[in-house]
Length: 357
Image (cartoon, rainbow, N blue to C red; front, side):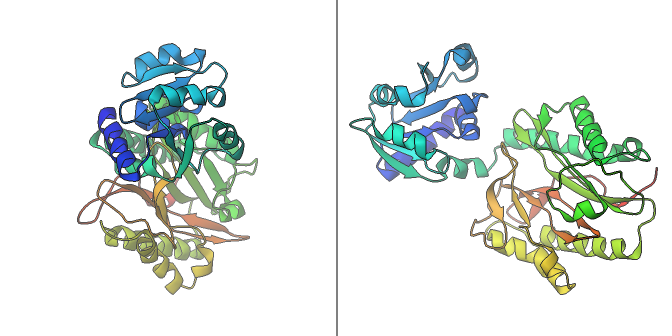
């Protein structure tokens, strides 16, 4: 699998007329090599060489995790060794990840004589967007752990529990279910706090009758899940039911209409139109979805201005929401795989919003 990815990069090098690609974005390093400490490593891929540059802490790990690569020791960091690295690969024109390399690092790399730096954007991310069978298997495992959280929610919630306490219970539960880590900091937001799409769990206590939004994800061998459910402890009032039903219909419309070949902005419109027609268009301010894989936010985008084209094998969230300051919010999120004829919904957690303790 790594070999195939390397060959696809080499095809891109030839097409773009460059000698090598410098990979520095951590998830891209992992994707292209299998090396899990990507934040402390760089790759240089040329037509004939695959070099992994890192320091003493990881020499043994490189041998175990990245057999397709030859170790290049950089005890003083990439910038100090970049000239030697380029010469080892026989590379003069080197593409670099312009969305990741800092200005300061670029200045240091540019000092190397005989090397021309060529900015590129998204070469590896384009490869990552379409998942292999092995990647989908890991994502499915992460999704199953997320689904299990919602099934256990009635036993997890306790009267008087704070948002922070719930977030910790969810994290501990996912680890117990086999997650290597959480995919991102868990969001547990009750009442007015649920009006913030990315609320940070607080000491506020969860109150029956209010909307409670729980956004969570597990990580399994590097691959993420992403799931949101909004619930109400006990019987919800008329306003909750109205808003919830609108968001649910918006999500169902998107999941029914999405398919390969569609632009991200058109997928977004499927859900956005339902919410706008119900009079809440201004209360849905974020994109309808985004790609998920090694990162919890990656290609493709399924937002209102996205020109990304959906292709079979892409894993995307479908997460419309309505947010009303002073009251709260409702977001419902599934993870789906794009197919030729539509989408396969991976998330199986119940969408019944009523939780009885």
